[in-house]
Amino acid sequence: MSVRVEVKGLYEAVLLIERVSRIARIHWPNKALDNLAKHAKQKMKELVPKRTGKLRRSIRIESLPDARKIVADTPYARIVNDGARPHYIYPKSKKALAFFKEGKWVVKARVHHPGFVGYDFLENTMNYVYDFMYDWLAEEIDLGEV
Image 1: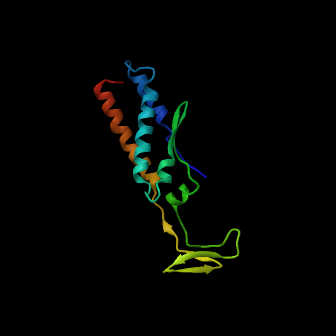
Image 2: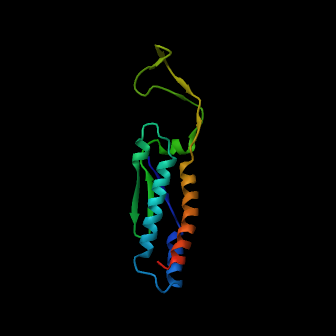
Image 3: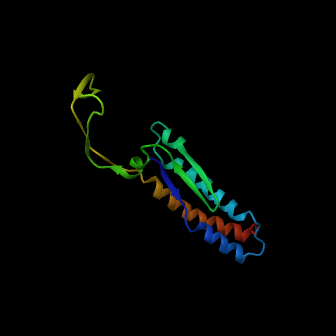
């Protein structure tokens, strides 16, 4: 299972800016989307936990004709983001779970996972992109680089 984030409405905002600005170049919307996606990817990589680095390495940009998606492509990305409620863990294929605890092997039919609060890296990334988008667009328009 992967987690996907898509910025909606940005392309329409860019089109409006293009109509207002007569000096807009034809590739400016893609430039804006690529720039925002690059910053979103970088910010998301900063916000995810760094335990093994697998989740961080899985973050990538997918280009669509009028949007960019930032994808965290690991089976556990949603759990890391949203957290987990307390639950029991049962063995999948054997009769018991075995693990090393306090210097000795322990065998149990089930174990209790206490749950945890998620990191909420998706929402925090989106908040960053939202703020960055307005600052960047204002700078582009003020500098006349549109």
